[in-house]
Structure formats: C-alpha cells, structure tokens
Image 1 (cartoon, helix red, strand yellow):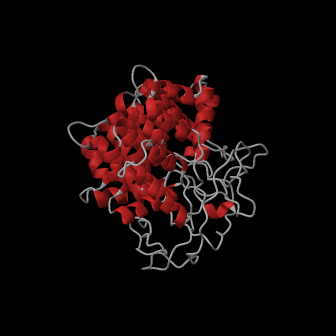
Image 2: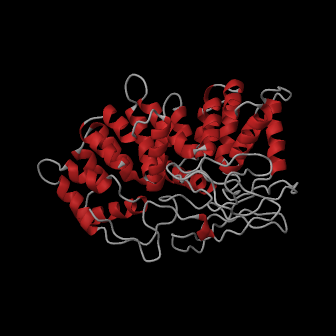
Image 3: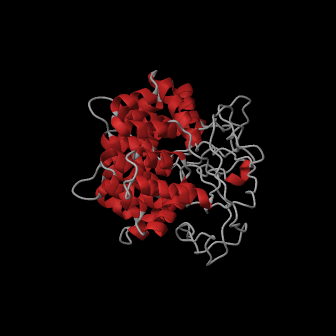
Length: 445
C-alpha cells in the first residue's frame, strides 16, 4: 500500500528533522559538546564537535557509542578548548516555539528557544517528535481508507491487508487517515478495527491507530487509574523525554481527561519519588544542543558522589535534580566522568544508593543517555525474558520504537549485539503467534 508522498521539500516519513535544519549556531570556541547517541525516537543533536579518530576530548572522556553497524571513530570536527571554566546556561521559562521543519509555520506555537545569559550563543529548543508537533501538509488518504474498509467489510476480515497497511504507516499521517476514513465511511476506524479483531492483535492495531501522542496519553491514564500505579509504564512514557514532547503530552492529557497530569501523578506517588517526577514533569531539561562544560561536569559528579557513596549530604534529591534537569549528552558526560573519577559506574552507584521506583527511573535516565538504542533493546528483551511474555508491555514498547524507522534499525542492531547474536525478529517470532506475530514482525521489518 503506497502512502501519500510527503510535500515537496519535506523529509521522508519515519525520519526526524536533523538539527542542521534548526539553524544551529556553532558552539563558542571555549566549549565543547559530546557526540550524540544513535538516532532515537526523540530528537537528538547532530553534528556536534567531536575529536579526530583515536583521540578523546581534553578531559579524557571517551566518545559515545558509534551507531550500530557503522565504522568506529569520528571525523574531525570542531577543536576543543581546555580553558573554559564557566557553567552551562540554565534553561528558563518557555513561551513561543518557532516553526520547525518539516512542520508548517505557526504564528503562535507554544514554545520558544531557551533564554541565555547576555552574550551567550542561542540554543534552539529540541523540536517535537514525529506525531507530536503540528500536523504537516497532508496528501490524499482516500485510497488507503478505502482499502482498510474493503479489508473489514462484509463477512470475515482480511487481516493481511490490515497488517500491510498499518504496520509501518507514518506517524504524522495517522490522524488524517482516521479523519478520511470517517468522512468516507461514517464510521470510526478504531471502532471498526476493534469490532473485527481480537486479543493482542487488536491491542497492537489500536495502539498504532492512536498515534504516538494519544497512545502516550492512553498509557499514562492506564498507569495511574485504579488502585496502585504501573510504575514501569509511567517510566516508559515519561523518562528521557524532550521538553517539547513533555509539554505537548501534558496538554493532550488535560484535554483528554480534563485533569492535570501533574496532579494525577502526585496523587499516585509518594515521598521523594513524587518529587522526582515533579522535576521530570516540569520539562526544564537542558536542550539537546546545550553544550557540555568540563568544569561543570566535574562539579556535578562531585555532588552526586557526596549524596550517594560518600554520604556527606543526606538529601539524595540532589542527584535526582541533576539527572532530571540535564540533557542526554550532559548526563552521558557526567556518567563517564563519574566512573573515571571514582572507578565505579554511575548506574551501579544508583542501584546501590536508591531503591524501588526511584531506582528504576534514575537508572533508565542514565541508560537512555548512554545508548538509547541499547536501552530500548534491553527493555524489549525484558518483556520476553523468563517464563511467559509480557505481551501488553511488548506491544507498547515496540509500537513506540517503530514510529522512527532509523531508530528501529539501531535497536535491531543493538539487540543483536547485546543479546547473544539473536535477531530481534527471531526473538519476537519465538514468543508470539498468529496475526499478532505477523503484525509485530511487519513492524520490525
């Protein structure tokens, strides 16, 4: 099934605009930035200054894991300067977010670039992920809507057609497809799919049809309603999100349920875990393009050590604040510097110093910053490891990853590398069956 082509000048669906489209200004000569991790479903900085192959930055931090399947080493980029002694600019309030490719220009978008101290270079905000930002110009979805109708009308259902159409349908086009379907056939596409399918096959199709944003909103409600909290689901949706995505998720949650997400999370959590998630929901992380200053990294590493291993300070929320307010690149630098200075991996320190929900949330922050593709590969394996398969969790995690095809490719390579040279598709095939299996396999393909 051919999807409507993107408008002229727009990137292919399933890819994310790179930071070079954002008018990124070169860093001040007295600062350097760490290279980004592999492509991910959330916006990542690109084209950061990196040392020539075989060399580390002046402070000795090794470069980030290269993209899976790519040659090791980095091409010469900006030179590093050891003299800078300043702290990175802190993120301030948000107002109007400028139009970002490939989305159409908006006169009154809700976000704006982080304010910087006088004389500091401007840092563009990370744009929303595909399916979260403004809708791009749409093509004609009539043929696709009619093909779906044909697959479900009358006696029986053509599950193969549903799979071939929906398994890799582009995130930005889902909403338009549903609108077209209703306009032509006077029936909700989601309701029609729900009536014609069953079990995990139905659950996976409906997860796709909600689209990335509404699926996150749906999962948050599921995690918070009723007795107890689904802490794993809460972590999956909220940890390591960009400021732009977090603000859009909060707005969509309130529009859907007429409740503030912050209020629902606070009422479900307690003690310091509540405070940690309040920091996360504030959406005041440093942007992906924020620079990494070596002296600041060393100061933050010392603070984390003081509240964990050294036990000099009793308030461990200091570590929570550091990890929840910095970008992935900065957290990666902190993690590398910590292990270099104290000879202990930061993840191990967190596991020893924290427990329960706070421990799992902080560990996921560190792992996402270190290697997002490996983090997601490990989360997929967690759903299939041991006795029985956690199918609902497998669906929600795989659907979230599959929206970005480049990231999906990186996750597959990371899974093969870190999980006994087994292909992700083979692992999923061994844990599932029927049309449910065929749909997941098509999403991974």
